[in-house]
Length: 469
Image (cartoon, rainbow, N blue to C red; front, side):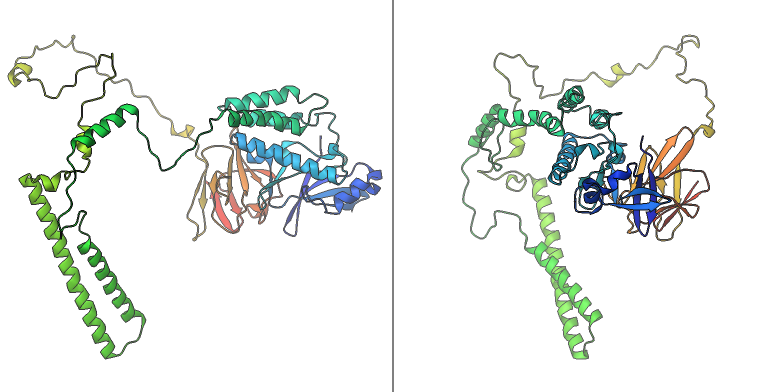
């Protein structure tokens, strides 16, 4: 079991591991690790305190794989990204002749760089994976956090678990198993050209559609002087008039004009106002003419013109009937209803009290409101009026939408700033390597530190202040 400590110093968060082997200080792996030349692992420095050496790993702006998927499930693409990232880290280490056994493949020590959006490894030269196995903790974590509704993904992870303890198992083998179904899907997919513009209907509807189209007579050419579409003169001219009046008002407000220029501008605005009034009268008159034509039954005004497809005729057709299948008849007329005096019984029988049905109401149950526990953080800043409702746990807060449960849109808040957990009746708060820190009652929490909060405590995320009540 690793003895891990966390420390914050000058805007950086560090994870501290003790150097157990003194002879490793002169080894090649020790020197290349502290040189900072390996891009895919955490930057490391060594500090000597009271005669002991300690590795200081910079974990600023990074979160762990375990924290990312603590409250949500992993999809196929996310599992594949994890395996691809770890394979990339192993290749980088092999390029520097580093032993793979020093790479911690534990979910709580596989870091994700939120800035560069890639996985970062933790290399600890003194790590001994004999107790837990090199790949077993990672595979068990994937099995526990995958989306079980994806049956293919679940089957592949089960296969990986079965062979994870074998001697020659590797991350590349796990990735190959995961990609097998993807390759089969590509091979089995039919090769066909797809035209995104082409639209097809079922065979029966297509035939009936062309039957309806053939019943329509040929289109006559539009008469001269008449538009085949809607008259857009009045609406467009009205919009231009409004824009002109608004522009004249803006010029008068923003610029200093002479009296002669103001008179010219007022005259132009008045002319555009007259045009606007003329357009509104035209639009109103056109609407009244269309309404009158509809009331008189003018077919040319309310129905489709010759040669055009009338959708109402298409949907009013008789339903399609498959050959040899008996279907219920389509009724087009209402059946005659009996007279009203036959339906209503003027002398209904009077039931005795014993024959009446009991009222469908039960006894009133006492409701104790003390059983309801509400977890809520109330904002205390004037600029921030957004309270935090803690409904489900664990609940993460930060400014990175899609990765946290509650988004705080403030520059002082980290992407994944803090996490709330519930253990029994206790509410716990954990700092998630935040840059500007998480405070409880004015005291700054260490990275990854977990504290219990109680009603009345003041919580601060960066520069946002809250009170838990």
